[in-house]
Length: 419
Image (cartoon, rainbow, N blue to C red):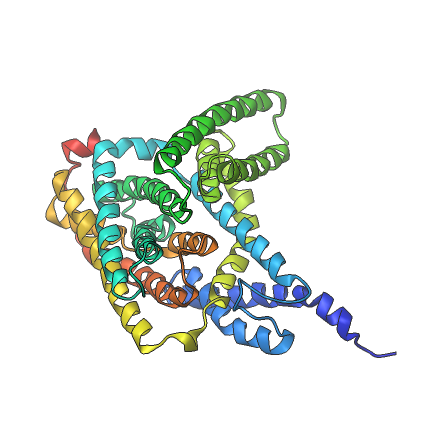
C-alpha cells in the first residue's frame, strides 16, 4: 500500500493550497505593515510569489481564469474570490458613516464628480494608444481602464488620517464624503460600461434598470431596517441571528442586483452594507464581518489577484504603459479633486490635501478590474500594470498626506462644504 495516493493528493490539494495562501498572505502582510505600508500590498506579493510554486507542484495554471485544473479547484477558488469581493464591498458599506456623508453635501459631490471625470478621460486617452484595434470592443476596453482609475480606496486614507490625528479637519471631512460618493459614481460607471460589452443592450433600458434597482434597494432596506428594530425589542443580548440575516441579505442583494437588474453584484452588496450601517447593530456586524473577511475571504481574493499576474509577460510596451498609467492615476486624482475643492471654496493647501487623500486606489480598483475581466473588458496581460498602479498609489498617498498635513493651522469649513 502506497504511503501517499496520488489521486487523493490531487483531490485534496486545495486544502494545502488554502493553508499556504492564508499563511503567506498574513506573513507578507505583517511585513508590509512593518515597513509602513498597507497589508494589501503584502497579500498581492504573496499571490505573485505563490503562483509559480503552485503551478510547479500541483500543475495548476492561471492562464484560463484564477486556476485551471482537472479536479475543479479553479472553480472553488474563483467562487471564494467572488464571495470575498462581495463581503469586501458589504463591509465598506457597513463602515460608511451616513451622517458624515450628508455633512459635506454639495462640496463632496462636486469634488467626487470631478475626481471621477478627470481620471476617466485621462485613463481612457492613455489606454487608447496601448490597446490594439480601433473597433468598438477596443474602445470599450480603453474606457474601462479609465473607469478603473476612477476608484478610490477609503480605508487606506482613513487609516493614514487616523494615525496623524487629522480625521476631523475640514479637508478630511471632504475627503471622506467625496470618497464615498466617488465609490457610488464609480460603481454606476462600471455598470454602464460593462453593459456595453453586449451589443444587444439598450443604454436607456440599462439606466432604467439602475434606477429601478435603487428603488428596489430602498424598499428592501426599509423592510430590513424595521425588521431589525422589531428584533431588537424581542432580543436583548443574543445578536448572532442578526449576523445570519445580514449575511443572507448581503448575498440576496448581490444576486438580485446582478440577475434581475443587470447591476454589478458588488453594487448590491455595498447598498446592503449601507442600509445596515444605519442600524444600532452596526458595530457588532462590522466586527463579525471584519473577522470573516480578515481570516479567510480577503486573503484569498487578494492572493488570487496576485496569482493571475504573470510577471515575465510584462513586455517593454507594458512596462511603459505601467509607468504612464501610474503617472496619470496620481495626477488625475490629485489635481482633479483639488480643482473640485477650489470650486467649493477650500484654501489651496486644503485642496491639495483633498487631492492627496483621493489618490490611493487600493482594493477597489482590483475589484473593478476583476469585474471587467468577467465580461471581457479586461485583458489578462493588463493586470500587471494595474497592480503596479495600485501598489504605487497606495504607497504614495500616505506619504503626500503626511507632508501636506504637517501644518497645524487649518482653515474653517467653507460655506458650500456645510451645505
